[in-house]
Image 1: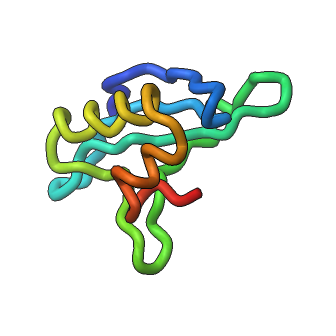
Image 2: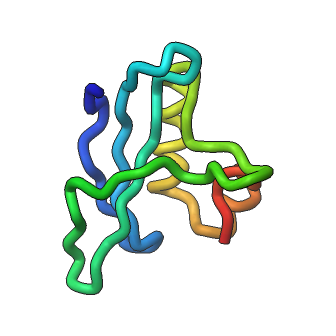
Amino acid sequence: MEIIKQDTKVDKHGMVFRIVKTENKELPYTVEHSPLNNDGTYNTEDFSILGGTVGYSTSEFKTEEEARSFFNDAINLTNEEMADKYPSIWVL
């Protein structure tokens, strides 16, 4: 795993996001998240992909550009805007 975009804290979502490149040949770029603790810290070893439950997509992408687009949206959009734009990944 190679970290493409370092940990970025997004207080409005209560999460930290990063982009990693994995060994997955079909969907190698992943936007991962880690929950923020009440004091604003997070476990640097506790990152996972978004979505993935039955009937939902995941935050795994074919290209770095797709991953960066989702990452930038997660930083800039509200929860409601993310749910509207990515209904199969971002669940309120």
